[in-house]
Every structure is written in C-alpha cells, then in structure tokens.
Image (tube, rainbow, N blue to C red; front, side):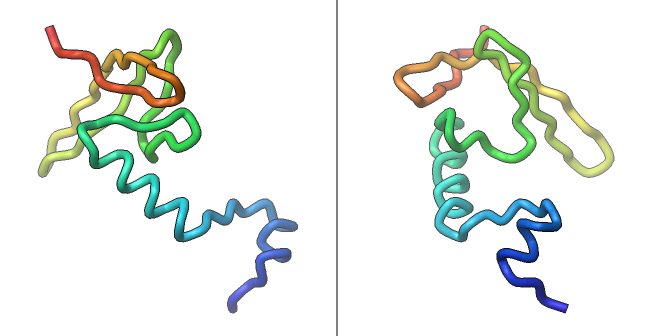
Length: 81
C-alpha cells in the first residue's frame, strides 16, 4: 500500500526528492568530491575532515579511511601518500 508524503513524515520515514538523489550521485561521481550538504550514502565522517567508507568486491570487504580537504562547502580528496 502506498503512503502519502504526510503519512510517511508521521511514520518517521525520510523522504528524499529525486532532484536531491540525482545531485548526490553527480557530486559523488566527480573525482570523489562532495559537499557538506550532500554527503554520499555509506560515507561517514569521523572528525577533522576524515571520512570512512567501505567497498565490496566479490567476497571481500575493504574499509577505507581517507582525509579530505574542505574548500568552502566542498570536500576534495587529498592525495594518498
């Protein structure tokens, strides 16, 4: 059964517009950068512009911890050393 927007809000379900979803996909695909307003799903801040995220390849899971540099509202990945 389909619920209306107001019913979903009452039930505590988060509703995201298709424009926001498209923007999040576009931002996350461009060189790994993203804005503070639109952090991609599966990317979690752990403090001091450091983020953690996981990638799955067949039967293995890799956890990545990466530093980002913030310019304005946009985070850019720093070069790996």
